[in-house]
Length: 158
Picture 1 (cartoon, rainbow, N blue to C red):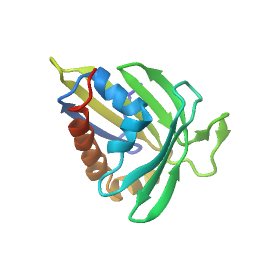
Picture 2: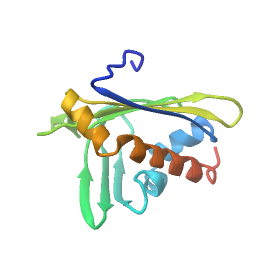
Picture 3: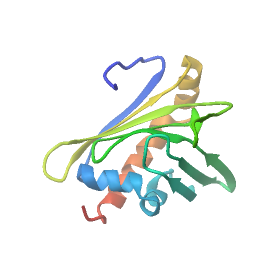
């Protein structure tokens, strides 16, 4: 699913992280963990609801410089310790959203003892949306978040 990349629609962040796939999956799927690293600091996640099943809620609320931002969506696919796919195209109950922005495909592949090849593919409906996301700092923001995830994951037991 992620091998057919479209450079006009897809943004990709890939890096090797010093944590196991199981630990990274846990950091992504347990609200108390996700809230610790999911947005670039000093911004923060102030609420999180995760219903780990296809069609289940994947909702986060951010405080970005004093502005509260709701990010509601659903999971499309979950493969423990391997893959998470979520989108803001729908909300719980398969209700379409008015202005969908992206679908994220997060994969975790073993890369040696206690290491993971972490890959985030973020797909957009239009080239304009992908360019807008890149221009607003996708690579810097998602890169900072990957670094925060790695640092946080160091304190999590598999």
